Amino acid sequence: MEIRTAAVLGAGTMGSGIAQVCALAGCVTRLYDVTLARAEAGCALIAKSLQKGVEKGKVAPADRETAIARIRPCTDLAEAVEGADLVVEAAPEDLDLKRKLFRSISAPAPPHAILATNTSSLPVARIAEAATRPERVLGMHFFNPVPVMKLLELVAGEKTSPATLDAARAFGERIGKEVIVVKDAPGFASSRLGICLGMEAIRMVEQGIASAADIDKAMVFGYGHPMGPLRLTDLVGLDVRLAIGEHLARALQAPHFEPPALLRTMVAEGRLGKKSGRGFYEWKE
Ligand code: CAA
Image 1: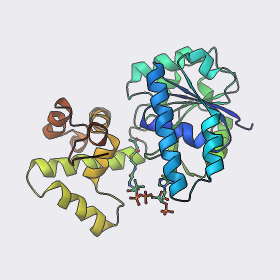
Image 2: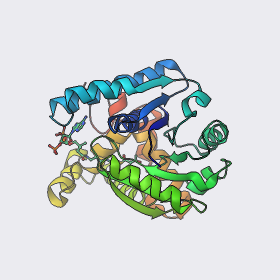
Image 3: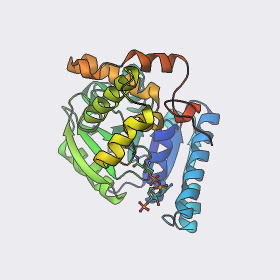
Image 4: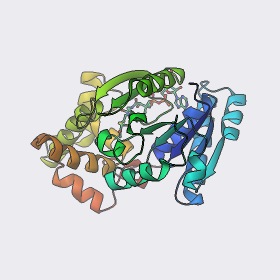
């Protein structure tokens, strides 16, 4: 089955990135959010990223224009998924919200559609239960920034059919990603490792072991990571990482995932990282 039409639910950082790669791959793409302002803000992020892609020589100017023309902002959920071959949900990490979305799209989405969640850590099977065709549901976990990061982590839920997994793998390869397949275990492969490192780095700042910049340098220059765990936490969003840490600490019953008090305080103060202008670092436009 060739994927020609895609619907992305949630026009934030991840949703807009996913819509961008779908449109660049030639799909007619609907970008849904609860308000038109949010959906349009997602389209603006895409235009900006495509422009950067052109400046970096990765996107042809003509492809930028066609990709933009293929994306339509949308506030009607049923309309967004109607006729879609692929639906990717990229809503906040809230199980009830995701289940509600999957319940709502079950009837209007075509029976053959792949219904994917971009969750970073929630159980895919629990999300799939809410859909009438759980065999069509799987995790398609993308990484920020989506147009640049090469990994696509596919998560097979208890009822995901082999045909769904194969179609998702083929689509991942078509959009130029390295595809891995992981069991529906808490944190899958990527978040389980990434959150462990991130939480420990925050604990080290809290304990005054070194400055955030020096802890990051340890991983960048000592281990060859492209950026340190604290800068990465700023990029992903402190609130996002807090939610994942809380979930993994509960699900895996392991203290090293437990979010440090410093992270909770920073989130409560609105220091969410790049998106709020301040996290472990100051961010200017
Ligand atoms: N479109 C296409 N290509 C683009 C682009 C765009 N909009 N913007 C940049 N690129 C390309 C560049 O041309 C460059 O390609 P080459 O390496 O071939 O030259 C590459 O992407 C890197 O771009 P930059 O030079 O602008 O940036 P950089 O070298 O400073 O790297 C970074 C930036 C890619 C973000 C890098 O720092 C990095 O990899 N950081 C780690 C990011 C990470 O770990 N993300 C995962 C977060 S966890 C997550 O997302 C999961 C979750 O569930 C929350």
